[in-house]
Image 1 (spheres, rainbow, N blue to C red):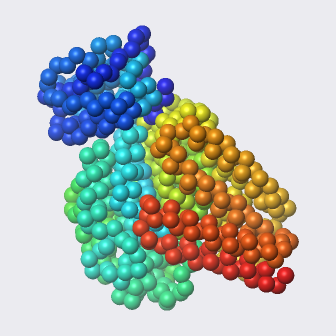
Image 2: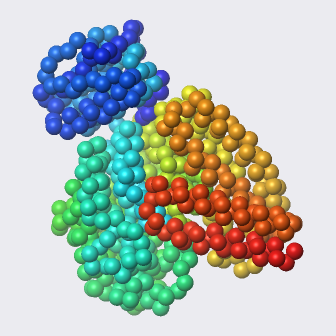
Image 3: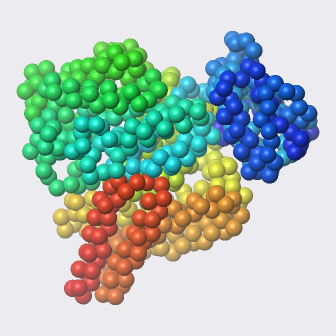
Length: 612
């Protein structure tokens, strides 16, 4: 039996407990109102996995019951989110130190029932998280704006794995009342969407934290005719769109009072929709700061002082509205001594995404006195298939650094650079890595945790599903990042310049097909819900085959006219299926930007064919 995250203490006992049609879920009088909803999650799981619909009762003893209760009196040895789960031959008891702890006990029992059905082995579990805040950060700006239904499904998954915080990255994809010029060509989230999701998350023990760009990464805002004058380089506002260009520039000028007033108004409007006590102002990657319209201030007081003064003012504004500020720590890592100038409760979000990420920034911020979260990543951006092994290495390292330097949170990230081309469900294994290692520091090997996720998440009894996905990810040679960069900055250069790239691309289709055959075998024994995840894998694998061959074509590999035309048609047919899959979970959002890349390459292939 697998449990993720792994409990801190688990003792298996002799004997079994049998769920029967006479069993019931019984809430003690001590349970708060929300526990009724949490009991319904358990009720639904039991119905799905055993066929039995158990009633939910309150305060009534039942033979063979599942009893839910809070501890009668707060005991010092109990942690805030702690729970105890006991399965005996007579009954099941879950006791929580809080409603949140009780929910986590229910989620653990759901995992057990998912694997063992109605006959459960006796055991005792004492469990609690190693770190206070265990979050997931999802980019809903640079490509995909998810449908609210999918965001709810995401919240269900996060809660199941005991993740208690969710942040959505917003630049322009919220419908600010007076900024229609900024979002008019998109499909933004609305106030009703946010409030509905906030309530849904809250019911599942998840704090939905507002997060908007307030300093750098204001591409759409600073291209408007109304507010372009607030950017460091207003003259860039009419430049043609590029995936890379959107990421590189577009910092607001902090020397202008109007800049602060505009951003403060956005913060005020957005924060009112959330019940969270936190607010993330971002303030990362201010690449243009001091290089354009604010150069005079930069020359007078220096970039560091200009940066910290503006961030401090934003943090103080957030605090004045009763919220605790957060911001990304990449810039301040260059001058960590300034962290002491920020309000005491400010949280620094310390990100680092390399598979071999060092502890330097975490240690530097800790030494400077920062209150910090460590922020690894699920390795999906700019990929058709997430880089699972790299993500695993990154997440385990960052969680270790967090423990070593006493971080108060782990915020696992999923960015949407270059159009968020990867299907969101492909990030689920990376999300579970983060959940597992934020909760429990016990080491689990890459191969082992992939087997456990395969069974728990996808119902794959062969336990190979995620391992195959990880191997597939390694076979992308001319990937989405290379495709975008070649289109926007190739300037006639070849995509491949080394023979090993040519060889890897030539071999890739055969190797991908072998792995897909293995995946299809897994699908025969997987649960129906797991089989639904096969389509994103198949389409991602097809994209890798097409683009690897495309990379060969644009690098001078000899292809015949018919082969080039056939590849163009194959790319267009793939994209038709990809669009349909996109629309199952995402609004239209920036699908058209992804289409521009696809049509560029299908046209290029036909141009190459025309000269044969």
